[in-house]
Amino acid sequence: MNGYKNGVIEPCSSAYARSPSSPQKRRQSTSLTGYFRKFIPAYSVIAKPLSDLLRKDTPFNFDVKQKASFDELKRLLCQKPVLVQEVLNSTFQRSINTTPFELLFGTQINNKTDLRIQQLIDEQLQLEFNENRKLLRKAAKTQILKVQNENKKSYNLRRKSPYLYSVKDLVAIKKTQPGPGQKHYNKFIGPYKITQVKPNDTYNAEKCGNFDGPTKTSTCAEYLKPWPNK
Image 1 (cartoon, rainbow, N blue to C red):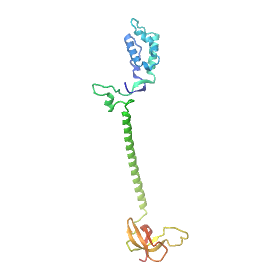
Image 2: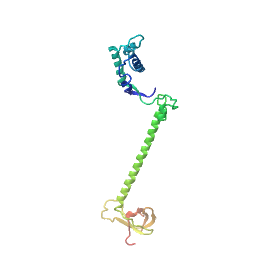
Image 3: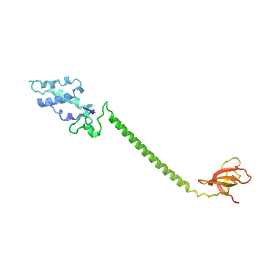
Image 4: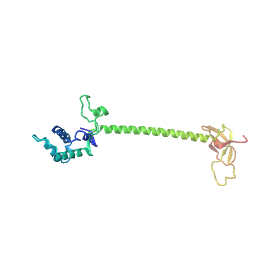
């Protein structure tokens, strides 16, 4: 038989819960307890008063010794831990042309030499892990997009569309490199002439005139303003 675990044995409340009242019932009780004799230390000593009743030409006399023996066996069989069948066994059934366990679970019962059930469990756990990870990543992506949209909306509330410049337009460029004594200097330098219009409102420009500043530079519309005398 396969598939056993420690637990409370069910038959202790039925087959041998009551004291036997006849030799036939005594024989049934002995057969049932004898099946589990290897799990009961000193079984033969404990069961001797009951076994003597089965001898030929021995009158059935269920007295104090016999009752004490019966109660002790019942106590040992019904207390924890005992053996109880945990799942359907793997005995082949001709009526279904397979084993009950395989019919129920779709695989042979697990034992020391066959770890197929553990493999199936591991595969299922791996599938669940991958599925949960996908759901977690999907939820994180959705949350990131939500926060990005909120940030974009908040950022655009205080902004206006940039001024569009063309090639050869004269512009002033805002100083972006701070330094000592810059408080009383102009915040813009120029004029610069737009030489190239690039994507995302960015421009290449070159210096027109004699003043402090880079000869050629690249900047964006945020740091530009039209030259007043163009």
